[in-house]
Length: 432
Ligand code: DSN
Image (cartoon, rainbow, N blue to C red):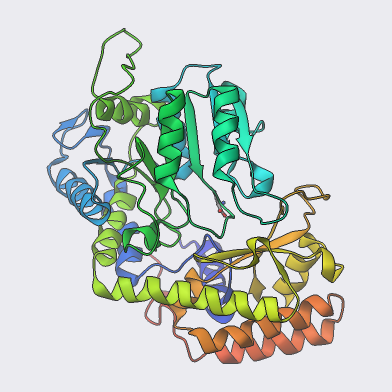
């Protein structure tokens, strides 16, 4: 069967990615070799278990692939242990929580409406349904997390786990202080570094590994790998909390976390994705990747400055990483309206709740913008002024179709100069 329908759509999607400005802070463009590894024969293999301890035959080569992914990830983050099987960041968090917590235990995470993540205790997510969620947030005046307030919240609710991390926070995390707070109340400290992982790997932001009991991440954001998740651990290799298995056995922390992934929350690992993770981790170990991450932060900074110049209200006033959260209330437009208008100009962002938002999560008062993907395309600081100008034109004229069209044409022409997967195509004639 020739599946013209799906392959035509893939060709259209490739064109969409290539011709627009991709500003979703959690997206990126993988290299051709990452793409190739992901679409490889490794998808055919069942390999439940871990390298050397599988429940299926024929895993000798897959084992070498997964071992390479594990070794490279450990080198990248200076970790003692890791598991590269989580299908996503959400799965990684689910596995850690299953391994470390009992139903009903209290957890303390960053408020979703302040930039936190669903899996850090939102009541519509397993983490808020199975566990007893409490939250810290940012200060209204500064847009920044006040660590003294985190400490007093922890003292008040005595969580079994504290989660440091976010999906829309433009400042760095004080993992050292988080650990002091966790120790003061006997909590496990989990850092979810899904967003800034690439910048952390290259030393541009604070290192969580040396302070946190467990670290989770996605692999597809600033790390520029395939869609997926990982779990890592630094020095707390032993089981510091004496957590027992269901059968009452005391096991090492790492083996508890491994079993939180499989059989706890997942079945067969996606070995094609693990192959692609290995390739991406190899790329992230290079100096080229260091230059890339530096450029991501330079671009974010340049973009933030330009937004501020044009009277945009950035939460916390700027950025120290790859992203920024913009409160649009002074521009008289909701996040939803802005997202919908911008996409007409081929600019992709996502609407986002801002701290102390007065709109629902489906409407929101803000947008989140990030530079990982446009930096991969090759844009630099001076281009950020042009990017902000296009956004500004559309936000000031959200219903003016002629301006949307004009911006779209200019962006499409501009992006022709920045190639994306020139040799990757899904022509109907090549289908088998
Ligand atoms: N959806 C991701 C993000 O955009 O940040 C988090 O899961």
